[in-house]
Amino acid sequence: RRACSFESPKMQCLTTLLRRSGASVCSRDAAGLARRFSASSRNSSHYLRRSEGHGGRTTSGSSESSDKGKGPLGWRSLLLIVPIGAGCLAYAEYLKHQQEQRQQETKVLPSVGRPSLGGDWILIDKNHKIVTSDDLRGQWLLMYFGFTFCPDICPNELAKITDAINLLDKRLGGPLVTPVFISIDPERDTPEQVGEYIKDWHPRFVALTGTSCR
Image (cartoon, rainbow, N blue to C red; front, side, top):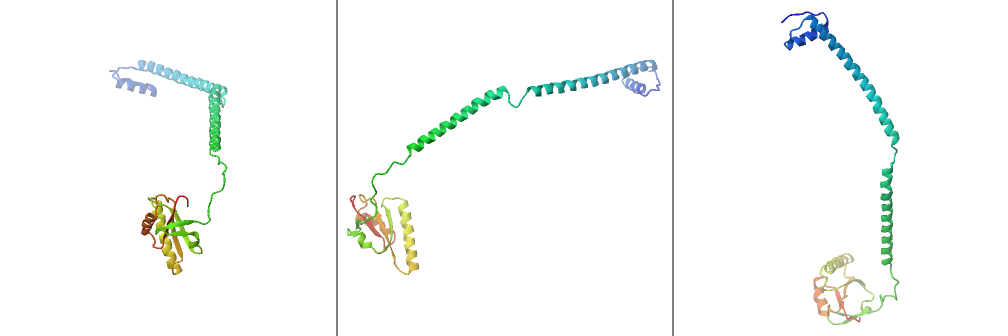
């Protein structure tokens, strides 16, 4: 290997790199390589600057031209929006028509005649004794209409009435309100049936039933 000395820092750096790679260089060779390396570096940097300048202008120009060609709504968007909007309007009209038809179908029909509510009545108690409305007139009554074959609602309501009667008796200082059970199923609720059924509730309960005509 031949030792060479260089005054330029670039040539010193290049010589060091060549020596590390195992090459033998002299001042003449190193100077030529340094000049070539400097020239190629200048050409590369100049090419990169020109490429960046042209690329930036081209990109911005293309983006500006593409932005100018596009609007808020294009033809494709309009072709999609118009049928979708028409379908929504048609469906809304269909729902409105269906609702109007249901309202017409459920319209209340005019009633004919007047129901027979109130008035005097004649019923039978658990002992087959006839009881009329005149027999209970002038008393405070707590009346309940039900039937003995009622599985859930009637027992719960009769229990509430029993508790209410006990509370009234306690607060008022004695029996003041008479509980009355009237069957709405006289064909099955015989006097014996209502008498047996009412035993589970308040002892003052008056159990009444009747016939279909009554």
